[in-house]
Image (cartoon, rainbow, N blue to C red):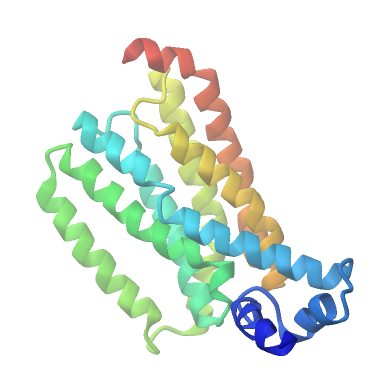
Length: 242
């Protein structure tokens, strides 16, 4: 009877949240303080939570642009550089067969960031350029994921994510400073990106062991922290403008 009850529960946890040996360690031997297995459980749980949250993280930004019918305050260069960094992380992770829980949010953030890029162009009166951008990006992504692209190129793209993140966030920070407000920048999106990048430092170390991935999220956290600080600093200025 215990085995029958154990079956569905085990199928939910293994291998989504725990390897079988850790399931046995915690739920069969009742070693509830087994640190290595608890770290795996925490990392997997955080990773899947980040992936789930990424489905919505940039939607507030999209809706804010649509509601205002304006992308004022958003730097197109910054959004493009962020898209480059996200694309590098996604392609690098797919090629290296990393667990989906360690990078899955990049897929959903790419889709939402591409949408924001198009909306920025659209509300600047450059809709044709926006459509051309969507087509070109799709072709480049297919090429990067194809066997035609050497692994060295994919690794180089991921390595370039670090300067792309820094440059993108500095451009946005400079735009905020020059404007004296954060415009249509969504507070919800900024806070979620900051929290997600912090959590990703731990999950990338735990699940991939890849220093390039971990380093990217360390830099991303610092840069997202800068934008978060600006958002808080200009909070009243933004409200006055509205």
